Length: 324
Image 1 (cartoon, rainbow, N blue to C red):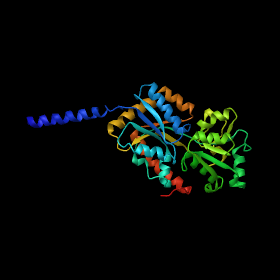
Image 2: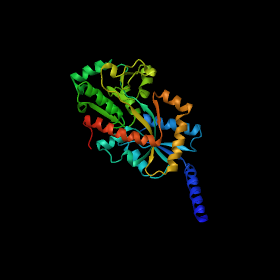
Image 3: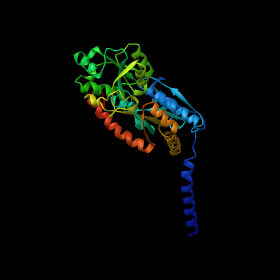
Image 4: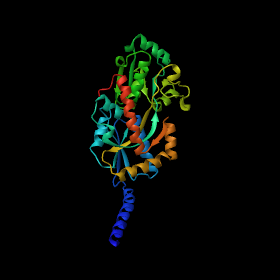
């Protein structure tokens, strides 16, 4: 009996100690925030905002943003995949990760990584240069119906991402086959904005974050947004829905780690990002970037991705982009 009691006591002690120890992991060297696109785009902006709060708030001892652009974000995610089981590497991600796999452009899927969170959702706008002869969505629609090849579109950073989906939904809604559209894909949002302002493309499909400042100073004009209702930050821009276009859609943005992260590493990042998401600095950042705060922890994120995979497969199949 004494031996049984002693053993039971030891087991209880181990059970009590293990969860506490699981919370003790922390970075022992600088953390890399990997971005699979060029500087200037929304993923890069999010990473740098997060890195600033990490530093100013003392949430992470040391961190740096590492850009690995190219191949529709795949180069960055392949780089992350090389660091399995190492919590010192985390990367930005979005529905592009799911879309790439469905379209067959990569073998990597969200199940090959450790989803950590979703921090925000973001909508999509169609924008033209400030002095463009295309004055409204109605003008654009009329021109496309007359000749789909007369308008050039552009977006970043990959085919099948949220920008491409919204562009395709718009074209399909007006009776134009999305596959017939002239479209250029840039590796970063900054390149797309430069192309628009330089007159090299007619319509840029992008986030409100990149277009609102340009609209305010007259260099660009947003024709419609994919949200369910107008945003107070750019209330003069009508939604697609109120203009009779079936293109209501949003993307989400967050961070993931490489596959094989230990529970202690996941717990560390859950705690860090929860503090970040509840901070006043992050609230101000989301407002300034015209993002909707929508924080999900790691366990909730995995369930969301399972559902999102089904949604994206349906959308991309309808658009003729799915290869699975």
